[in-house]
Length: 192
Image (cartoon, rainbow, N blue to C red):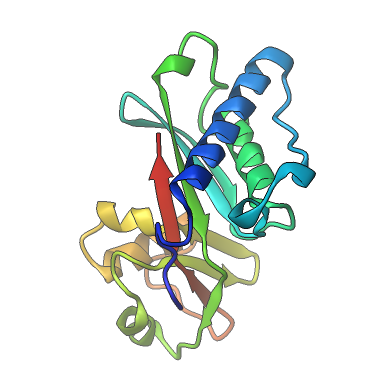
């Protein structure tokens, strides 16, 4: 898997995606709906069908984060949707209001395609994880959790990364089964 990087997205594309995110939040404040983008006016990476997460922070504190690991829509529309949902539909937070919009900072994380990781046990998975780079999707019957690569900044080891992901999925830290599966991805993040 080749990690996504700034080489994949021009500065102009990054600026456009951040503008779409900001416009979608402003649209939500004025009309209650996100920005609808005409894909006829898009080109290059703005048409890519990749997963994306939009993270909002207010004065450095998380204010919303919503996205999708895969998307059938062009990236520009996926960014607009994720920005709107981060601002108004993240169940952990009240909707963003007009009094705080100027304090909100937008970060976009564009995800690479998912790559299954074949593992036989926990130790095998831990040996295959690339610390600081891999995002991870955990799935098992009735359970699912996702961590962006950014989570590595908050943990001290692959063991802690996996433990937190298992707990996020609603499982215990020592959980393992024959049906558990993992997919990795990389992300390219940029912000206002």
